[in-house]
Image 1 (cartoon, rainbow, N blue to C red):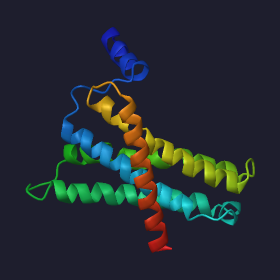
Image 2 (image 1 turned 90 degrees about the horizontal axis):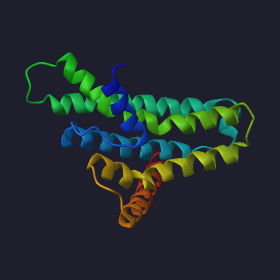
Image 3 (image 1 turned 135 degrees about the vertical axis):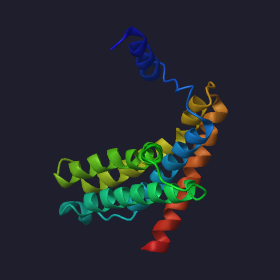
Image 4 (image 1 turned 120 degrees about the vertical axis):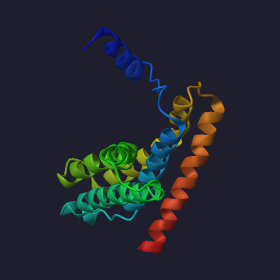
Length: 181
């Protein structure tokens, strides 16, 4: 890897800088997928009962909801984004797939935790609680992600806004759970 590529990678990982060439519209699409993925994963997690972990149902449910939400998100964005276009391009599909990845990343840690619970290494209640808390922490930190994408330094207001966002996302997730179960 050339030195300039290593420096860029180091800056992105160590200094946590966003790609300055990422268009605002694309950053917005990724943030939208991040929020949506977290809410859907949270709603799936809070609907679980400890008994669901013992036979793998919990892991299958959360993974299935996540994958189907990812596919639905990509499909909806493709249809909406190409409403005025004549043809779908491979580049357009790759773009939508990349921008929808945060839907999947939202459930990675909860799925790993559910696998740990299924294996019996942690109690089912602890795994469910840890998964829900993890998702709310992700939401609370969203302000920092947004500031990074805007190339601004976070402030104490960033954290307060994130906490409000997490509370709102939790309420939406709970509403979805109540209405759909």
